[in-house]
Image 1 (cartoon, helix red, strand yellow):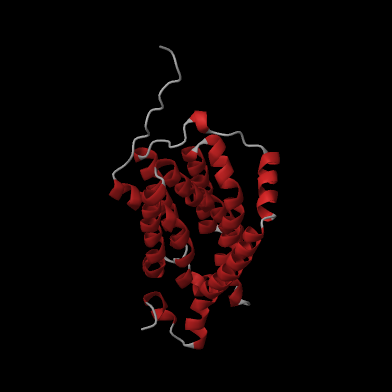
Image 2: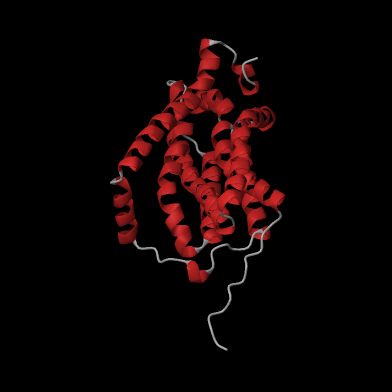
Length: 263
């Protein structure tokens, strides 16, 4: 009797390994931002001694790239598959890290950080899509919650990691640490996790369709309010993150204790 072929279930990792993998991928963004905080005084001294506050742009430039990349990463992964887009994003992230490592000026460093942000959007967005491909309902919510817990905790330890790297190898070595972190997380996924979006479920990437969906979304009152509220929240958050190290340094003269908290 003929008929449509029965879809083959996508193999899953064990729950613990999958949560650890997704949490590590989510943590890429937190590591890329918070590990840089202890390096701000050194960056200012080397690249912008006349205006130390410009060193804070090393953080916001990454966020700018991340925001731009987030707009396109999801639709691209729906068209080309999760793993290819994940690999492309990781490649941009690594190239940005290498360029930042060798950047002779602040302007080139900021451009490299924007490129890093664009690349980081790939793993960050695609990781959520992979979870949705494999799980639904309560199970999906639980896995995202555990992965986000790792993402939430990581900013507490990232400054200490950054400080240790600076102490041992100098501030530029932080960018090499980003390279290693990305290679481990994405390599882990490539080796252990099969593609979760089969070819038969992929959709063509059409700019007209993307723009139509984008326009329709922006016309929704609930979405407009959500964007406004989240813009205010994240503006406050990243404004605080960008200025917290200089506050410890200049206002309280406790730059040395910054990576370890307020004690």
